[in-house]
Length: 123
Image 1 (cartoon, rainbow, N blue to C red):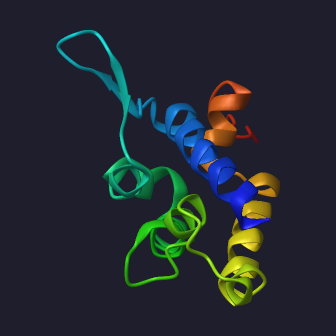
Image 2 (tube, helix red, strand yellow):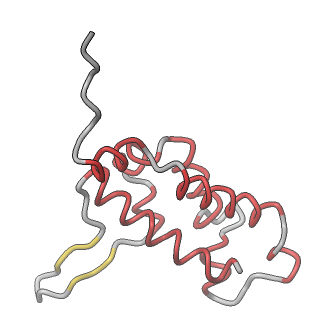
């Protein structure tokens, strides 16, 4: 299931950056062709840390794209993940992070979806 989860998380990170920081994860080259920045670059941006939180951004970077970590995104995308890793602790942690992001989105994203931060209660 990691092969299905990794692209969904990658897309979710891009959407969260757009909603939470107004940051585009693509650019236009000189010929007008749109190019997406790689996930390793996107997770290294200060905006990713600001929107996702330093801990979540670090965990996603290590789990998905860092060569010294499980590198689940790259290993699953290139058919290099073995049977033992599919249901290992790294994949379980990735699932937990995905559920956490769905059930408790970052505050900047919640605020953007609701039209701004909640107003202070008057007494």
